Image 1 (spheres, helix red, strand yellow):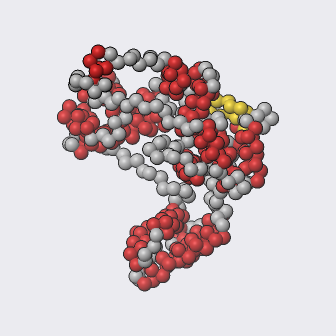
Image 2 (image 1 turned 120 degrees about the vertical axis):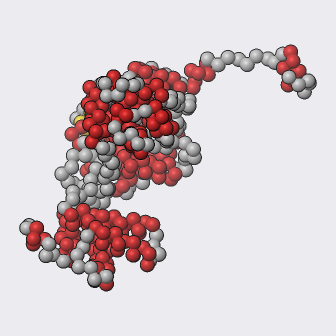
Image 3 (image 1 turned 30 degrees about the vertical axis):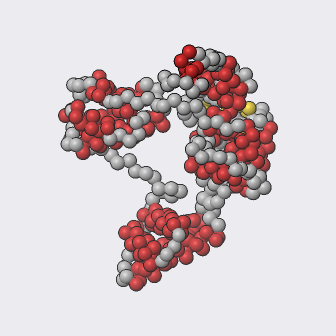
Length: 411
């Protein structure tokens, strides 16, 4: 449609087109009614304020005005904000997204060029996209702090700026990424000095992996309402975590073509390692996936196995998986106070269960899809029974220590 034609549309015309667009996304009728009712009030607001044309700023002004004039709950505020955001995207011709994309704040061009060289270096080392993204996030924050201190070009970076920027890093895991980057700019001849030695070292405190017992995991699985649509979906995806130890990213990215019902296998490319993993499709998992796909899963042109229950029927995210698992932990009455309770705990719980059943560490590592031989060290922490066998008997007290325990003189 010609742009000059669109510019003659009234707000009501745009709203009608927007509702038709949402219909094409399979939104329910009740949801469309709520969207129309919410957004139609913007038209009234524009008339009252004598505003002739709509813009993103008008939508923001209306939102601020509405929540100031009406005492509404935060959930309702969020619903209004979402409706306005989606209308803005449609109005401006932006691509439809379920959630707003977090924009990366770019550094000055001279810094971005060096960071791009470092990214290529990371790829040469075999780093995965997620790993590189995490490194760049830390490095950008570090460089931004250096720029704030007056370092307009990386060649003028000095020790004082490095130390101050490092001390302001909140997540100490970032120190390792910053250290390697500073080493890189020195070895590549970008900076004459090697400032990597100025970056502090952070050693993680020793923690036993968080695990849940077989009985607790069984209670969580039984807490899922397997008669409801969302319950059938959640039961299938949670079984992949509890019974097979699949990572959350691999679960949400699982596609229909990776399910082999003839051979009862699930074959996929691991998001973290890039390696192909094949797992058995256990009977419980096969039945749960079949029930979900045949009776609940929206029939649409998406190859992802697990989709949203409500329109738009997009692929679910790891955030949805984490949220649902937390709800089922609470529903099952399992104490998660001060304990991790995300999808990853099922991997350590499964590993703990297998180790306690005397399955070799190497086999456990293979089942969970680890490629680093050092990963088996983590399972030794879980082998509580074997650790008990190594315990030394406490010797009987003697001499002055025995006297002290019996209420005698002080040590």
